[in-house]
Length: 361
Image (cartoon, rainbow, N blue to C red; front, side):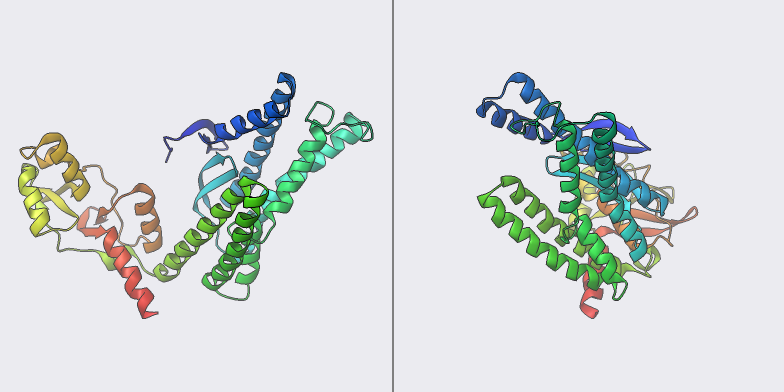
């Protein structure tokens, strides 16, 4: 899903690449720092060019993760560029310890290759004298060396065992060989959060970007651990187990005022719309509220109901269904066995299923 706060840069190998608006703040910060240092316009442009080149390396880093993940059966929807780095959005991630190790290692390996190519460039194609090189600002002479050093820094930094960074994922994959994925994730998450706190404290004294990275690790580790808990509990369960056939039916010609009355007294989250006994669509609580605001109480259900809605097969894995509904912000969906309408599934019921089975465990 394309964020309205991101600029779409196009697709590489079928993967959409976008840059978040906050990236412009990084450029602005570089310009301000450079001006305060008394650098010339050419020197400032070199600094900006360096950052842009570095983020090309970051894109290649994320492509390394993404292409290996796709090769191993994963699904990658997009890559986002943020001021603190890149992020590959994977709808489906390879889960075996070996596959996770390969996917996690692919990104840093790309940066190692970039650094090696830059070293070969400076060694054979454009020999440089390191003794005469100035490092007061980035210039044409030191540009390849600085970019090589930055790539090596990315490698070292990403290999810190702070989940969900690459090093943390490598650490989890190693733990997963000897224990369950959930327990391995919990241990990696706890260690990652220790590193996150250290980053935040260090950032308060040295570099504010460390604070941002620390919070990113803190929230990312917690969020992914929660998702793994859902995956653990939903394993071996499918949509058929949560089908609700006690739904409330509306006619397309029903007025919105009547639907609102039924929502208050009968249904919690939505309705099934049928025409002459056949499934015609669904009407969610949010649809109804929006419809009342836009059309008033005399509006009709057929004007706002969802007709072309995703139809869930009964054998759909429950975790995949949960991910689909969360990602697409769908809270109420129909279940069909071929053309036979079986009932509906409510995202709220999926959460209840999780909480009950978590308590039983």
